[in-house]
Image (cartoon, rainbow, N blue to C red):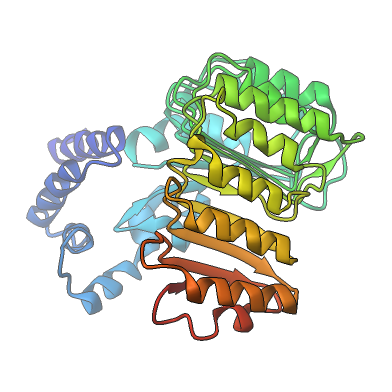
Length: 385
């Protein structure tokens, strides 16, 4: 390669190796300006404290040019400040281009949303050396695919050196699939796992919690469907496993499963629990105000700053009252879904009458009673969308 090409290769590689560091980007921007390349101006504007927004938008519109060879594998929203942050590829395409793309660009996420995905593809993906460069892996089978996709193949290889986040959607069918994946996964930097519209059971996440190779901070399961009979005892064992084996867990989002009861969540707030949650979302579950009152009394809630629950009766409002006024619970953000008029009136009264010492400053309300809950609260709280 010519000298200029060699310089660009080295500068881009430095950015890809440290995607969160601004310094290599600014060095590259200066070099680009020397070459008369407007991408250098865009990079400087993107990192300026007071940028010329009109010029920034004008340069940003040339995203296809800045994406270059990655353009067929990305979209407008994934090109930020002149750099591609996410690509969507099939497994064969990743095998062919993954190493070059991820070594030369600060790409964080690899998205595999592919109807034709098979267990053999997952096995090939896990053995691809370029997977060691991926920080976020998004794997979805597609909502129109009914065939079962065994997940064991994804854990066959050991190329997860940089993996920080794992997103799975529309996959999973049997307990054995999840056991093979979550028990066999060797990803030392994995911190966040998100399941969306998957087929799981109460024991699925237990395999994740018991994997000694993982140190998790963020776990979420949303809109899951069950492939076997659920039981409260199974969920209690699962959350007890997190309380015992994942002390770094800070954010837990479990929504859309009626088998999740007070008893299951209480395991996270007992004196023996090693977990101190910062955020808890337990909407569309089987919890009641009893759980909220227990949280208000628990020393394990000393870091809880965000809470998301459904409010459907006076007992839930009483539970929120206990949490919001508990001196040991620093709750600053509350998200509720409320479709009951009586509960909405009670909640509005509670939020109006909270003493100044209460920590709450941000409020998000959804449901048919949204306007009734937030009526007159805009001056005291930041109402989130």
